[in-house]
Length: 284
Image (tube, rainbow, N blue to C red; front, side, top):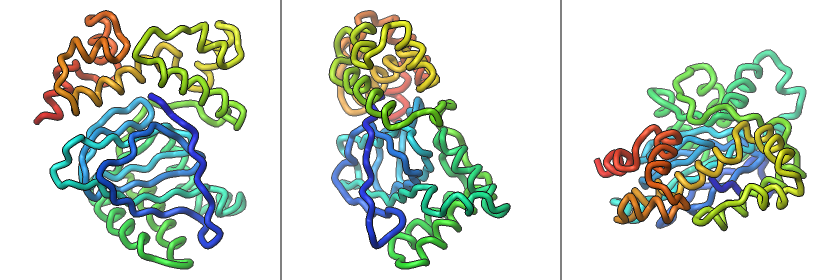
């Protein structure tokens, strides 16, 4: 699904980033960054993409996403409340220093950060309590921000009320050079997903032979390039199924497929639904 590397600008007055966003529609751009993200939906509905997870979101949705995990919130075209609103936190684990994470008290927090590499959705009372603290941290200043962040992380880690969103992905071997190389491949797929995609062209963009590219991509993304391409196309199909009145056949061809049976099979593999079943799920 189309991640772009996002650089989060540092703020000399704060050690991590908090933003309260109020917009008509959430920016529809698949991206990833080196920071951990915790995001609370206050208003708005649509489709959430985290790694290879595709789910609906609504007010109260609260997720934690680890470093370098691609994600996107795609708003419905006609939100019932007329506005999309979210509070999110972005922080780099380095703000505490390596010694902090070696403390016995920090081990469980470090573990939940590592587990968020699959993306986690909070549930139950933990979700309600963390949502309350997210609203508090949004209006806090000074050291209180840090204590609230640690409280949020400790609450998530200790209570264990969450569900994994995506399948595991190997990311600890990705470096800046890999980011630039993968970003070029992602852009190629984004720009051409509606038409025939050439593995040879993708390999040449990465400056690798076809066999080397296939090994490289599988190692970095923990999935084949073909699987990734299907996720991109299915993700675009999901948006159209929810937001447009096109027929299944039209969506199939617009998404880059030339065989409806193959499209339905790949759609079910990625989402667990048939295209028609997915459309009905969101209509209900």
